Length: 241
Image 1 (cartoon, helix red, strand yellow):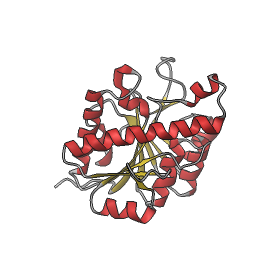
Image 2 (cartoon, rainbow, N blue to C red):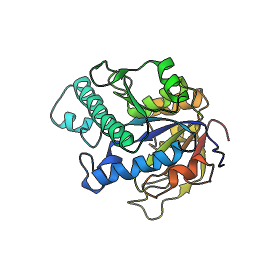
Image 3 (cartoon, rainbow, N blue to C red):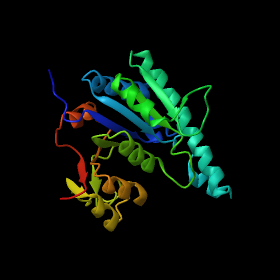
Image 4 (cartoon, helix red, strand yellow):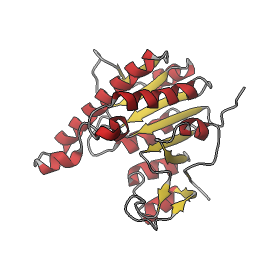
């Protein structure tokens, strides 16, 4: 029997990860591939919580270009995360993975409200829990949501799955061919170097609660399982060196 290194994890997925090559919306084959990898990890007995973004449906910069008030634009983004969460839930349950969606904004007809103790109980019963709607307030990103929920449910690690980027670099590797990859950093390094892996609030929250972060390439098949089993891929971020 394989023994996972991490027993309870928060998997942070961007909305763009669900869009695949389409760049917008949810690509059926892409989401099926992602949930298959999640099932592989779930079958190991790992307790999995997911925080999903909404950038494949709505981005704050669109609201800014429209002259929209920031709070209103952020609430639209929160609703986009709920749409993605429902898509993930349905796709997971179609392959036999019991799943619950909890939203930070109350919408009882389609999902449970976020209740910390209930979320933990779902995880203990080996249900995947998807946290949608951000933290329920504007001006906070889904990165912050991932850090906050990880602290609340006492997760072992935050797994930040990136699109075709295999870790943290000192520059954008898609633009700069000389970009250098880091294998290990501290949360303070991310803040001081302005590496933009996650926003400052999320980094501070992770640092204060001693939650490690692993940044890895989502698009390489099997990577979620490899990270869970403790293989050294991507970039690991700790509180202290």
